[in-house]
Amino acid sequence: MTRNDKSGQKNKYIYFAALIGFGFLWTGTAYIVQAYRLLQFLDGGTVSLLVCGVYYVCQAVGIGAVGFLFAKRPLIAGGRRIPFWSTAVTMICLAATVFLSSIPIIIAAGVLMNITIGVLSGCYLTRLATNIPQQRRGTVFGVAYAFGSIGTWLLSLPMGAKFFWSSDSFYAVAVLAAGSLILLRYLSPLPKQDQIMEPSALGFGKKIIWLAVAVLFLLSLENTLGFSFPLKSAAGSVYIEFTRAFYALGLIIAGLISDKNRRWGAICCLAALAFPFAALALGNSTVGETTMWMLAYLFLGFGSAYRILVFSDISAQRKLPGLAVTGLLVGRLGEAVGTLGVSLLTGLSLVVASCVVFALVIALFFALYQKIYSPVLNAEEIEKQRLLKYANRFKLSPREQEIFDLIVQGMSNIEIATALFITESTVKFHAGNIFKKTGLSSRSALIADFKFHNR
Image 1 (cartoon, rainbow, N blue to C red):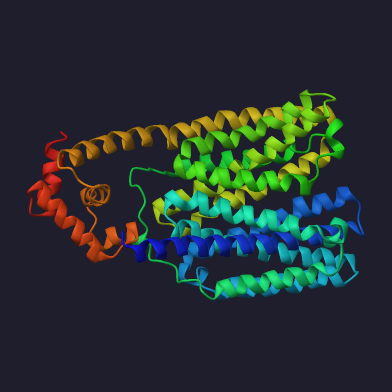
Image 2: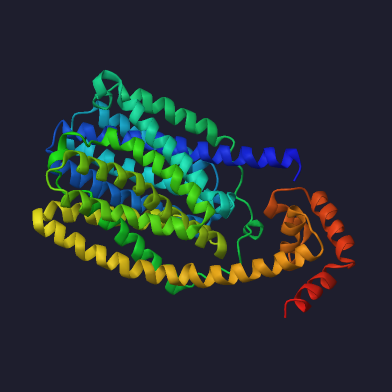
């Protein structure tokens, strides 16, 4: 890969991390501002049902609408107009929320605002599947959401950490939204689906997709139930601003680990489910409870990454961009149902319900794990060993090995260039070296020779 190719690839990753991160930053801030505004008129229980129940369902509606549009009209869904007008509507609704005093209008504005927030989330996160290769998706997502999480916390600090209670917060969100629109100007058209190269060994059938839907729904439901356990000794030391730093760190670590090995990322996302139980078991230990909650938010980043990456991978492999946001949609619904459960259950009944859901998550998760990761990775490892053995026989360089692998898969020069983000002339140069080293003169002869030596 030439220096220009590497620079262009890196710039693309930075751009999409910034686009997704800015989007999450300002929409997340708007979401919190409207929650604080509601608290000026309604009690905490009602606001929780609205913000984490009704409004999450509204976000799911917006996400679902985007997924449907990507399935039916991908060029329209992947354009700039929908994010632009969704941004405009979101800001109008936030203005109504902040500057008007009519509760019905504020609630109605919140409904519409959260639908458009869902639309924006769907538009931007779908690009992980369509524009970012699998081995970089976790990192781009983790960095983007960590940026948004830390940014929201920093914005909350002025005025003695009461900035989001002030009407001035609207202008801060407006500036951030304007920055997001500037980034939107440079959004490239949606790439053709035949240019999206994913490992062909991944067989995501309908049964696996529905199993993934069930697992992600239950994961989000359990997170909401478990993280609502009443704290005893740590009640005064654990608060949202305090935990966001650990959540952001967890997102980055989750992205890096998931890109390195999807199996470890999947396993780690289960860890967060156990920490609320651990904190509850510690009784009156302030240090113990606080430590457990800090670790829980650290590992919560794995859950957020997992629900995005599972369906981003499925979407890219099946070349169906409409599936990319399914994980987020299902997660929002799980969180909404969990919020309803928290409002109805208290004390021991909440813990028992969480234990039941936890058991279901574990059972279905490992069923999904076996179907997605175990057989696929075994086949991949065998194939990698065969490729490495053949490449070592002819002393192919690392880049030549990459191109040789894709040649064996039957890709053309232009397809290889697209997959590796290099020029077609670079592919031809390395392919020529492969033919010289192997003493073969054509792709068909190379593939036949490889298969002959790996019977």
